[in-house]
Image 1 (cartoon, rainbow, N blue to C red):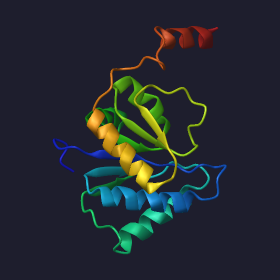
Image 2 (image 1 turned 90 degrees about the vertical axis):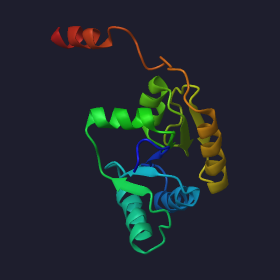
Image 3 (image 1 turned 60 degrees about the horizontal axis):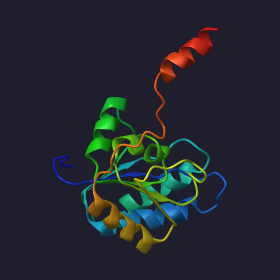
Image 4 (image 1 turned 45 degrees about the horizontal axis):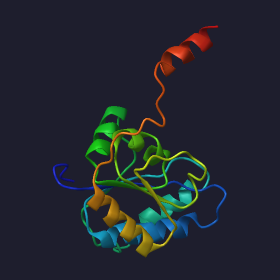
Length: 170
């Protein structure tokens, strides 16, 4: 991945209350692959259903279906490196809370897919779509065309760390 050029970050985790995690991951894999843009795809978290998503990734990647040689699948990075990647990303695609929280503050455009983040407060940087390939592609195009958003402070309160320390110390 050439970090000086535009790239997508994909963070797609299982939805523990749904049964189609693998099928939804397969749709997203094909959609991002067809988009033909550099992408950093993070392995799913350890929630129930993550093995279905991991299997979808392995099968897609290792069976020769992957056409875009500019997609890199990674397990994790150091926190500072993660924030640096988010800041440089053209868009975050998936269903991770990082798209809802960290990206709101950083102004990173987000395409949030499905129901995993339902009822979470969102900044103006988040565009919600269903598990539909065309809707996801359209939203990615719109978010990339929009570019960075102003920082949102919906998940920031001054002196929060100090307040937590004070409460825990009592």
